[in-house]
Length: 135
Length: 173
Image (cartoon, rainbow over all chains, first blue to last red):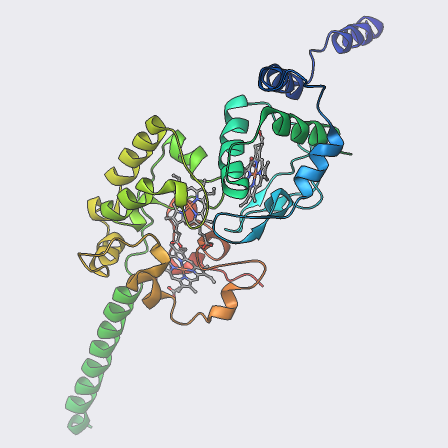
């Protein structure tokens, strides 16, 4: 009985669907190809630079993604209104990048606020690539 | 012995009247200890709690909520914009439970503390707030565990449920 149970578990693991963030990355990839025919993949290194870049928010405040999301994305961050934000790294928070509508909403707000325009699919994909593999 | 009786009576009357006055003054100062009525709306809950605690609709009048909801793309220096359907739903929810639609004593006093031609965006800028927090120095809000006066829940543990009674206040270190 024990063995049957164990092998079932093993099979289930083999058949496990791709991590949800991969579904989202797939959608950004399709979009990135449309935006740029020369698209050649997402890069965690570019995503890291994007995350760490210092920017000036529309309010004039010195900021950047790291500002609210913590310089170490495996740690919780904190908003300017003092609310704790759960970690951005998927290794520390498996709920990240599992809901396209939510992800898009925050890209829309945070990109407009910190960059003054919408982010490209390339930038979004790089950002997720970095956070999905951050250890 | 009998000579003292009237004096005694007089003294006890004075004492009890003073006690009565004291309780009613106290009652005024601390309003009723009733929490705001329980309210819930899923869109409000998820969209208005990402950056800060949930602010109960009974804290501000209808005109304030309309102004806040009309300016979400520039909300206290941040972009809190929503799609039109959610914005309308949340506006309807907030305005239908706003301070000027409430019967509780606390909401009525909040409304009384706001000039009729003013629509404050912050509860923490109302005269009501200022009067009830006059013993708190500004430096205290800057403690790491608090951050700002807007972080009600740091001191009022039931703030998101509309509970502000004196017995539930605890100022963190």
